[in-house]
Length: 79
Image (cartoon, rainbow, N blue to C red; front, side, top):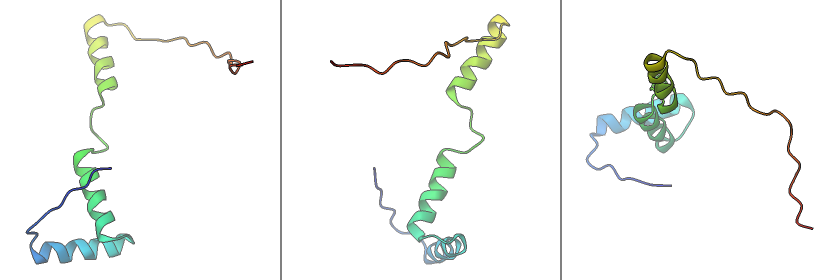
C-alpha cells in the first residue's frame, strides 16, 4: 500500500480533521484516507464498463446480452 506525507497543513485544518475524525469514531489518519478516497473515487463516477456499454448501445442500438453456462464445473484433479 502506498503512503504520502502532506506538509504545511494549517493548524485550523488539522484541528478540524481531528474533530471530524472523532465525530466519525476513527483516527485522524483513517479520516484523511476516507476523505481522499471519496474525493478521488466518488460513488457517482462513471465506470469504464458502464460507459463502454452505453457507447455500444448508442452506436449499434442493440443491447448486449450474454448467456452464460450456469452448470457448475468439476474441480481439477492432479491424480
